Image (tube, rainbow over all chains, first blue to last red):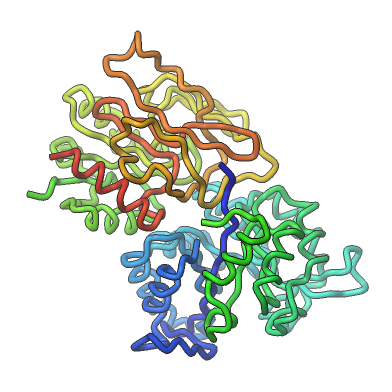
Length: 253
Length: 211
């Protein structure tokens, strides 16, 4: 009777195709998000996240196609983030077949957006995506960034998580820009700091390299674990991560 | 013959997954808010996400409350999902605001008491042995996402036309209704359409009971 720790593969999607290299050997088309979603579903993924990095607005329509095709074929929760700026953007994604929507830069620029989305669709659809990095000049030692970590938002990351929780988010996706891509492990201090200021579920992201890293993040307070490259490159399977979690005494599906 | 199932369209949210999951479960599915179509179908699914008050408002706008009542009076099956389950009860209390529900079942929907809310993710359930919905899948996990729930099942067998089978879930020290089956009226707090193979099996169990 305990909730299972969730393991969530994340796919970067550009104009309807998965980017960042993937080397699944058993795929006919490794760039097809729908096909990759199916593979992760079979491997036991508890949810999926699509990060839409499509730059041109013309190509954004392809995102909705990908979301709707995935929702028609894969029956686990799907979060879509990237470029969400308005309540209407959220509505379109939910209608296309997304269950949750990630919001990042737009909420920093206009925090009322959080309350607007929560009021219309309930806070459970809203995942606050926080790209954070270490910064000595912030009270918590962590700052929020925008534009994929290239720009500082000039704001304390942990204070932002606390403020956004009060505004009505359903979940926090905490991504360490320092750890991202290093495979040296999650930023455990950042997870601990966020855990103390929010009572909504916390998804840890950035730095996963070994099964043990996932266990450490859970011990630090994460309810769910998101990773991209270790899964895409076949370094680890979702099953490997779940075995390690189970052996460490955590509950998994 | 596949049974005809209507998914009631009374607002926004992800209805595509529900439609496809029911089709996969063997139903012939129509997504509509048309009263006559929804009244005449073999089964009616009432989905629901978001705030209780907003859902009730949307439901009333398409006369969904009357639709549910009329179907049940005629013994026609209805399946509520998530907030679509919650609105079947008498009252919902969110942020201190009381909203009147459909009142098909006595009871109150109130905030879950746990350290981390929403209750979000895959949880186990305690289903009664004679459950139709959970036949063969009582030990599986199902996907929940909700901040409010029904703590007390208040329909007593002496007052009920038909005895109910109630399935429970526990989380963070709290315990609430995960599903209920009561004659033609069934409901789940979790999302079977998002619960992978276990959810598909539950929907098959329900669709099979329609014919």
